[in-house]
Length: 601
Image 1 (cartoon, rainbow, N blue to C red):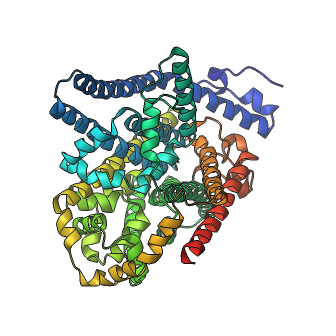
Image 2 (cartoon, rainbow, N blue to C red; image 1 turned 180 degrees about the horizontal axis):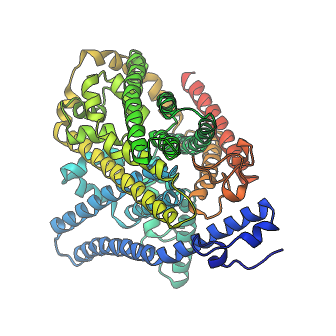
Image 3 (tube, rainbow, N blue to C red; image 1 turned 60 degrees about the vertical axis):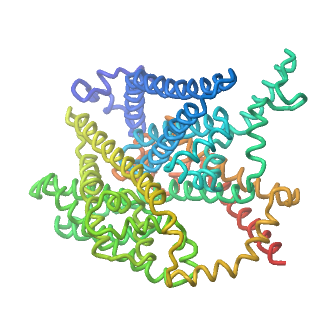
């Protein structure tokens, strides 16, 4: 029979009394009560955090208003006929620096959101939502409010900003902007057209009479018209694939680790045996490209944390020390094995060409990684970079293995130990006040680890750009014998590359080809938006909430899967999102093959 929830009597661990309810309630009804208590707690957290979120939003708006005032002030002074070009240029350089730092922080935050998702879904959801909104605002502001000519002049006078020009104008950066803004692009276009219609009614058309867009809209249209839209759309698809693969892969990784945790717990093995098994499983999972290192550390903390607290075992903190040691050994050995994969793969000239071993940016990274000792920029790359790709790249570049391992050591302190402890803290539940305390400590440790990871990624970006600025000319002029085959391969493909660029120009594409590539982009973006909604909404719509500490056999109300792994996909939108991703992939492959055949004929 339905009844009103009373938090004091039904939820509070200190004051609740469920004796009368449990005697005549089913298991499903008790699970529904637990879910209702979680919802009530979530509402309280949102109410408590809302003033802080509002303050952060106000600060962000204030920063944009300040940057806008600098840009507007420089324009108004120029309109008055006063030459303030130097002042205007300095202000624009300041705006550009804010843009670069903000964008780097935003994307570092997106990466770290996925990094901490296994430990704290709420923290990951909040971080991802804020970072994506911030990135969209930064990109939108620069494209709509900063004059393109003035921006180019400011870039030319700023050495560090100048090294960013190639990055900002690359198809990859444009793909990030198009994919990140996605539905906001047509929305802003429609709003700009409505704005122009209103101006027409008032008799204020702007400088281009009869145009369907405002002056700002026409300026943006002229800037984006020459872009290689086929290449940009293809890269949007690739970025969407990475996001979808990471989202789905992390879900099933956590399910797999949850199953392993239950099996190891039921096997009644000694702590030493379980520790050895955790080490072996962690080492094997490190060799899977889609498995993040943080999932391995959380798994070790959960399994060994639970086993260490059993009567007669080693105790919680010694268990965490052993878990950190096991993960550290697995990480170092995995780095060598991943290095070996890259080393042998790098013997293929095509692989070297794909990673751009003869490009300035890759050579700048190589120069940083070849430093001896534990230099900050070197350690930041090896610590903050994705586990598998970073070590594989070191193998392709044939770096010194002991020096690579030496630079990887800081990962033990900034990632392995914190995440292992977080996994262990997830097992320190209970019904008393300790549950809330350890949950708070777990979230704090997770947040601190994410901040360190984001800071390291930001410093990596700065170090590479600084190296390109300082040594870019010398790196580009290097004639290295080991890279001559790459240059020869690139030269042999120049004719095909030039023809491919010609046939994939947006004006040269047929209507059918243009619609097909756009269909693949729409399919991927819709799939990605549905999956990303799980990070922003309280109630998930694609995949059920599931952490390593959850049980596959539990009911949905307590974040279980009712004994079926496939139940992690929520009907119907979960199936729709996966179906759209599959359709987008098929169309992406087909249009790519069609264009390659057309360029080769």
